[in-house]
Structures are given as C-alpha cells and as structure tokens.
Image 1: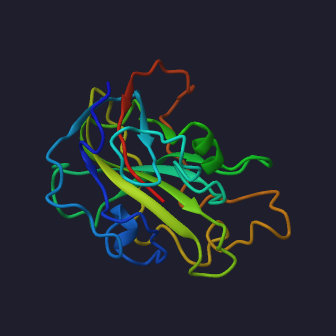
Image 2: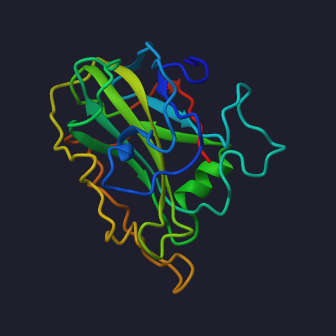
Length: 234
C-alpha cells in the first residue's frame, strides 16, 4: 500500500545529522534539523506481522530515487547500520515524543563484507522492516534510523539520521516487549558508536542499543503485507 511521500512522517527541513546521543533530538530528529510543522495528521494502518519500508533520500524530493545523484539515497561512504524501533503511544499524532518506551524490531549491521547502509543504498533507499505479529494493536511511533560511522573514531563523530512515522498496528497479540529510553539507549562510549571503521579493519561490529525483539516461538516465516513510507536523509 503506497501512501505517498511524507504522509504520516515527521521529517526535517535540513538533512544534517544528530551527533549528541544524550539530546532529545536523538528521538525523532529536530534541533539542528528543525522538523516541518504542523506535523502530518495521517496515521498509517499497518497489520501486525506486515513488512514496511522506510525510504531514504539525499534530499526531499517527490519522485523517489534520483539516479543522477550519486549521493542518493546517501553518500556511499556513510557506512554503518540501519535500525528500527517502535514505541506504543496513546495517539500517534501527539506532539510529545519524550518519555516513551522503545523496543528494537530490526537491525542490519556488518556481515564481514557489507554494511547495512550499503545494502540500503544498493536497494535505492529502501529499508525493510518487519512488524512483530504478537504485539498489541494500537498507535505507535516507528523510528527508522541509520548511523554513519565514517567519522566515529572519536565522540561525537558518529552521525545519526532518523525519522518517526505515525502508525496504527491492527490485529496483533498481547506480548509486551521490554523497552529502552531515548535518550538513554545509546552512549558515546558504546563500541558501535565510537569506532574506527578503517583501521584496524572491522571484523565484528556491535550494533548499539538493545537486542531485536522477537515474538515467542517466532520462526520468521510469517507472510507479510507491504506498506511503504518515505523519509529523507543526507
């Protein structure tokens, strides 16, 4: 189900990074990259167990992937992981994003050869995220993120790019995942945040944040329905 660019997404006016993991800007962007207001009033219906795709681009543009821009969806030198979180909320159009409980539902780091951001780049900006089938229905924020580690040998240096989508999960179950807070889930000394990815050569990368939540007894083979949302990054 294609809903159109930026519908149900909180997105910035500028494509710069967040570098302070202790700032509230690490939640859904903002601060040095002011969010466009008023926020969208669209809430995207997503069936539990479905697959959604966040779509990243170098700049805000209405026509999707721009083959003429070598930095679309992101500069290919911005190596690092892609990650996604959910936070349950009373109302996905609420203004406040602080004080929420977040749980990780996707991560793609380094497999010894290729970084998650590179796989997203090769997919022309598509970041595929599976929604757990067992979580309660209702409104959630979906936080899609990529981390660029090309300057991460000291802190602050890692570049965090994220946006939050406003979704309503239908169906589902009753499992309550353990949660973390933003800020709080990341620390400047985390080995996945302060790291030299060039020397010595990375052989094992620890993605920051908690483990990915999985439903009890999940086999990972659930049939999914695709919903596409779009966001923009540098």
